[in-house]
Amino acid sequence: MHNKILAFFFIGSIFFITKGNAQTTPEFRGVWVATVDNIDWPSAGNFNSDSQKVEFIKLLDMHQRNGFNAMIVQVRPAADAFYPSQFEPWSEWLTGKQGQPPIPYYDPLEFMITETHKRGMVFHAWMNPYRAEFNLGVSSIAATHITKLHPEWFLTYGDKKYFDPGNKSVQQYVANIVKDVVSRYAVDAIHFDDYFYPYRITGKEFQDNDSYMKYGSGLKKDDWRRSNTDSIIALLSRVIKASNKNCQFGISPFGIWRNVERDAINGSNTNGGASNYDDLYANILLWLQNGWIDYVAPQLYWEFSHRTAPYNVLLNWWNNHTYGRHCYIGLGIYKANTNKAWKDPTQLTKQIEALRSKPNIQGMIFFSSKSFENNPNGWSDSLRLHYFKNPSTLPEMEWLK
Image (tube, rainbow, N blue to C red; front, side, top):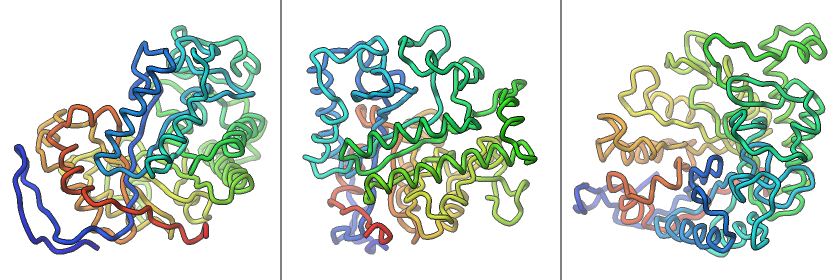
C-alpha cells in the first residue's frame, strides 16, 4: 500500500522513517472532539460565544497543520444540543446551564461545519444515542428536558439516567433527532459511539424488565436486547439516507466484538472483560453485513503487548470483518505515558504503520483532540512531519456514488 523506505531522519527524540514519494492512497484521518464534561471543547467555564469560536478555530488550525482531513465533533452528548433544536435544550457544557442559549447568540453547529469545510475537512456530527443525564443530582437539567417530559422512557443505572432502548417511542424519538440534524445541516456523517446499552456495573442489573415483558415476544433477554439495538441502527440508516443520500452513518464500537471463548468461529483471539455482542448488545457484524452503516471505527486503545486485548490481534480481526464497508481504527493517543508501553515513542507510530499495511483498513481516528496540544511523545510532530506530511484525499464509498 505504501512506498518502500528510502531515508531516515531524526527530529527531537524520535527516529522517523520517511517514504520517498507522496502518499497517494486515500486515507481517512480523523480526530474526536468530545464536548461532554468539556473534555475537548469548549474549555470548562468558557461560556462566551466569541471565545468559544476562537478556541474552535485554534483547535481546527492545529489539526489542519497536523494533516487531518476529518473532524468528529460531539453535538449531542446527553439528550442535549450544541445547536438550536425543537426537541432538546441547549447543552450545559456550552452555556453553563442546560436550556440557556449562547451569549452572544450563535449556532455552534453551523459555525463548526462552516469553519471545518472552509479548511477542506469533513464534519461528522457525533451523537450519544441513549445517555440522558450524565451525573445524577449534579447535571444541569432543564424543565424542557425529555427526562422531565417523558420520565417513563428512562432507566437509572449507576450515577446516570439512560433512555430505555427497548421502548419503541424512544427509538422513534432518537430517529427524529437525527433526521432534524441531517435535514438542516450540511453534516458529512452522523457518528455514534459505543454507548448503546450501558457498560455493566458489577452487582447491578439494568432494570428493563417492564419493556422486556411488553415487547420481548418470547425472545431470550439478551437476544431481545440485541434486536433493540439492531432495530434502531436499521431505522437510523433509513432515516439518514432518506434525508440525504450522501450523508454517511458511522459507528465507533468498543474494540472487541466478541471473545473467542464465546464464539469459536467469529470471535477474536482475546479474553477481554467486555464485548459488544455479549455486554453492550451491539451486533456490529450484522450492521456491516446488511449495509446499515457506512463505516466502523473500532476503539483499539490497547498496546501491542496488552495481556488480554493485543492491538495487532484486534487489528487483524477487524481487517477480516469489514464486509466491504470502510473501517477506520480508533487510536488512543490519550494513553500517552500511562504505562511502560505507552511511554515508548514508537507505540503509536507502529500502530499507524500496522493499520496502513491492512488492505481493508481505510484510515484512523484519534481520541481525543486535547491530547495533541502538548505533543505527547512527539506524536503531533510525527504526524505533521511524517505520517500526515502529504495531504490525503478521503477514501470513496462506492455504494454512495
